[in-house]
Image 1: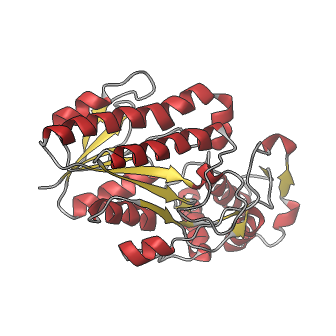
Image 2 (image 1 turned 90 degrees about the vertical axis):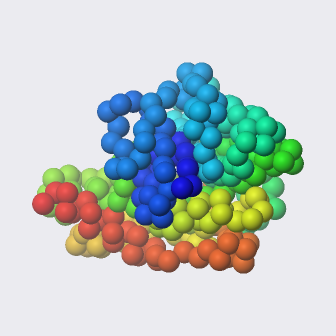
Length: 315
């Protein structure tokens, strides 16, 4: 039985990936922050606080997994400005500890571990070329992007040293499992509540920002395909189609049956993010060619699934 370890197993991506691996007969272990977190049925939980000098290296040595998926991170660009030290720890230093532990096992010849790092389009910052691919210059413009860039570089360094480590540069990907701290779920939840009279208005920041939005389960499949590929490498995972936040709002409110949405949305300067890229657009042609990966769910379908979920919660 193939054994996998997922950090961030209770998050959106971690839950979808855990379900995928369990369905394929894996023994799945997951790192959680505390015992109260809801873990996917069938996952063996391990409570670790990665923010405080955790024992992640010891856990890897004990489990000796065949595959490691590092999804744990402080996942908000906004919060990374509020706490850059914690961001550096969770999004960067922990990756160094994990890769060092994997190398010890690799050098001992005990287990062939495939390590997959969930990287981010934020490593490109405000890119000067569009779309971005694996060769695009890394120039982060936030503490979040800088920490992810450090981790991305670590993966490359350890791969050179013989570790089977890959970095998967994920563009925005959504689902009903997104928490409302993310703007997409904030929008769909507000559209649902406004449609039934439980909320009056929605406050947002830059509505002109354009993002490449995909379907989270598709991106979980990309992580698995990367682990199974014979050669570790870096892969951009994206749809190649961008939409503005305004497009997302329009699609969400239309799905919720609110036609006069422009009267319900307010732009707040306090929600504008420093260093926010005007456009993020990924070129996943390498993943398509080498991993046989392609997105399966379109933008409007993603928004509809999220709004329908939020409407169902209200009913």
